[in-house]
Image (tube, rainbow, N blue to C red):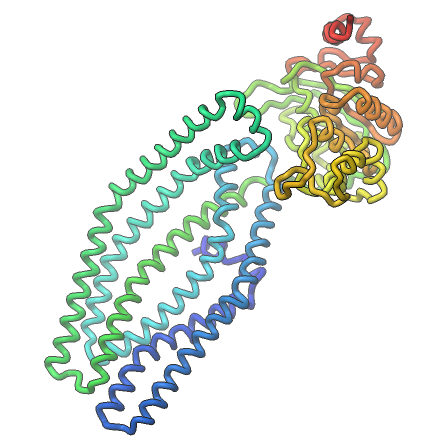
Length: 583
């Protein structure tokens, strides 16, 4: 039951009043409704058989109906005026917990398919299953109290009918347990299939794929894979139909056999005169039918409980992934970082070393470029400095202190990054620029002007609150690749950083924008330590130091002039690029 308790935690944490009211309904109001509906016909028939005044019968009926109406009104009021709004808020808090956990989980798991399966399971099911647990508890309590009440009514006259019901229930529970287990296995096998199908859906509606869908055979490739997954889904359904069909037939037979014995039992009691009052006939028939239905609902309760237990276990696994270590000493952005790599090695899972025994030192306030071919390990250095990954051997020192000893949140807050792939979000321009903590409105406005981003908004005839992308708004502003890269760079100018890292910052920039970028870097040269990863070598000529990485190893280090004199790998790459500019 620990999985059920775990799924219930959000409602205990965020919705105690809702939970208390739900339980009160379960133990008092809903069972009372069932008992009244059973006794109501008996009361009227007994009054009729004893020739009571008609007004007495009318007021008795009105009394019973008034109580039933009150119960219905209370139920409607709770469900429509209170429950829905509270559930939305609790579900929002649950999803917020998932988002928080996602950001705390070690970055190493990002490319792990199992992690994405668990994340997909959590985001799809956690809120729903948590709500279902409350319904499960309410239904269970209502069922127990109602069954106890109706069993007392029936057992007083024909106790052995209860034995028939209990026996039928026990046999059916064995069948249902087996069906539940098979259903859960099917759901688990279906998760990877649904994840692939969701990916195909995403390719067709995301803008980044739109051009290739129309100009290449990408559509045919996707539809081929899509058909394969649909066939896998159909095969999965057929596989489990074969396994469950005979169980469902057995279940239906048990239901019908029990019904026959119950009817014979009540009819025998009436025939033998064991039940004398006219109204009691109706009460017993209604109570027996109602109790029979409730017994079958027990199977649904057990089935739901078993499913929720397994769902809870799977969802909980998402929250069990190792999280990042966050405690440590403070890291301030008041002064530039000194960065040192000492014999650092790192490799990604199932691949060769991305970095192999690399050592270098960057002085505080120094501007350093890292260059090399694709896949050489340049971007890995950025990820290690952000502690998205931890080194496998060697150490990284920040101001002479091992990077693992710093408070992770404060460390990252002191580092500004413009990643190679710029993400633009469906928010306003100001919100896209001001992603870092402590970014002031003044700094955001200055950043917009410095990189001409205010002109982009004006050019589109939009207000300052206009949304970027057309994710939610058909009139949203769509940025070009170069404009998006300007946003990424502008983000890094909105506050003071101890370390600034730019991963291919000028790959999509026009010459004027690249000039403004270099001017911005020189302007801040002593305020922060700067690391720039670049393929366009003309943009790094004036850097204080250039590190040349090849196949995960540091091959050369020095200024542009020093490396050109060496006539090594850097010189070769620079001269090849220079040929493209010759007339």
